[in-house]
Image (cartoon, rainbow, N blue to C red; front, top):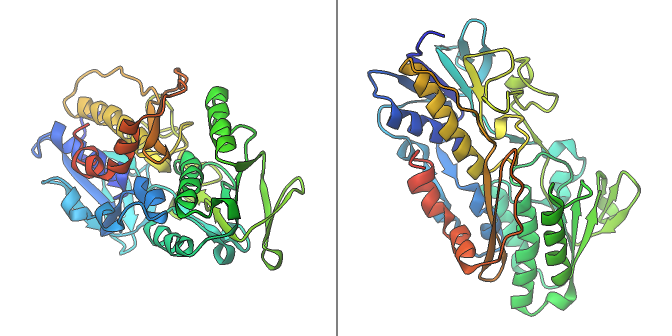
Length: 380
């Protein structure tokens, strides 16, 4: 492969911004042109969404301008991608402009599709973007009794254990208000385990039991019956609710479905050890846009960006590179007032059952400070 002179990054979210900044740190402008195409003007730290929805954090500290977050000497094109043509190394945007590249990185994230579940938009709340996090906070402000059903209708979704965090912290919030005994909290999950590793699943089940949260694993959502305020699983299990909080279905971008690069849900098919798109040596995908067999989290993005930036930089400088991406992930969540946990694992290393600590809680609580100043800047 000829040494690349231009990298084109699709997406101005966590993955796109972090990779662009990391590449700029590793390569001089005279060595490599970097262009980011994205449509967003503001960037939201999604790791704060559960805390915002529960009223533990002010959303104003979780949003920054995309222009501010990109390092110098990076071209930011604010447009929507219309189509990708990997054989001719061209991306076409909505305006009709063609953007050429030597290396393409797809970092377009996941799209929320509430309409895929009839009744979802009318009945269910969620915290998967800033607007809905604020709306959920308003719904919880006056909630003092009744049944809350929380969970995940289908996988994959961004940071699935954010839903575990929300359930555990809602328990703490209602307890703090003195109304916990008037409320039921139910948690639904489509898999038989609450986490792919059995020991971690047992840990979460134990935490739920201690908190009086009723678990329904293997609950694959079939219907939301609005008139009965009821959800129904494929097996026929029914649960009534007063407040419903479900993760919306996630899909890849529409233009990817037309590209032939992705699976049936629109997530780009990549080699899990090189991040290269199947069939191409000059196209990669990272972050939530890919079909990597790891959770879609900011931490996973940081590890994959670290790998891919080194891989691309080696190509720019005509150096040999034999490294492989190991699928490293580290997830921190709050599990109680002043208690948090961190799970670390990879393709080959299983997570250990963590100890709860105030340090992990503080890291989660102030994560956006590190996120904006260090993670996104490519300094990790």
